[in-house]
Length: 379
Image 1 (cartoon, helix red, strand yellow):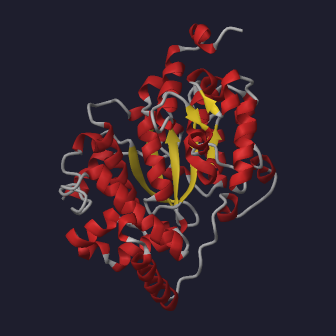
Image 2 (tube, rainbow, N blue to C red):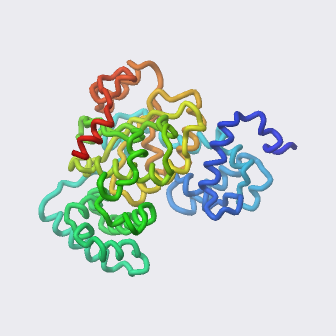
Image 3 (spheres, rainbow, N blue to C red):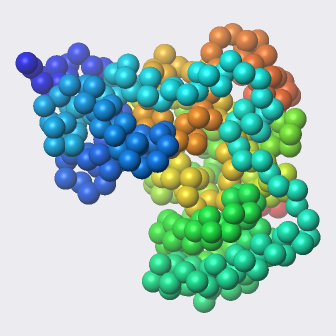
């Protein structure tokens, strides 16, 4: 039987290139294959580790290749898996039942209910967070320890730590873990010369003006009916200027922090309206993975939902690759909205998103002006 490599000419070049970028992103040790543990980073959707491992192995076996016998995927096998119906079914399992029911937005999005905040609750959980942080061995919180030395006022800021408690709905252990991971990733991304500067346009972002200017991630100025800020992610803007991948990711960090300046969004999360790429060559898969990884484990943001509106004809490939690295929680919150402008507007209305909050190129009333927003931030 001919290998997929012998049949690559049957796959559009851009699609194959996107699969290669995704493959490289998950081949963590760079050995040219993806083992089950590496694949699990994207294919999380089952309850419990053992079931998850068994499910992933079953999924890999379903593409019927020779190299899955040792639990490792070659690039050929990975492409077959990405193009298989079995993968789509794996992602959608359990979600179909939810669509047939009526929920509040919080429960429909699968969010843990936000607790009622009192002064007593916040004080109690803040003390517990401090104790939890102290209990983590220094060697497991290297970034945090450096931050504690170089920017102690920022590290100990009450309102800043509250972001992490709210993100984890006051689960102290989870908040402490996220806080430590935040400083590790911030140090890795910004470097020791900028990681401990204020996350402002004149501070840690002073050299990232080009990546910020393309409008890859923008605030709309509106909220949904429950108070979640609505943001706009424009993946079609990628590659519209020359910038380093790390600069784009830093710009994303800045925009997340700007989003979190609203207390309701800290508590209830944010909703993202997404415009996809029209060509796979536009999409930096690795940058997207870095942003998602930070959102999942480090940045104190609750992502309530991602609405992919008016997807391009290559949506099948984009959604498959996206779902691989979103993880279980975020994958369940990805919604693909197709149809006419009015169809999409009506669907968004059902999610508590008004026409005023939807960009005018989708039939809404919002005129985005990211340059104006940035200038106001600098003023």
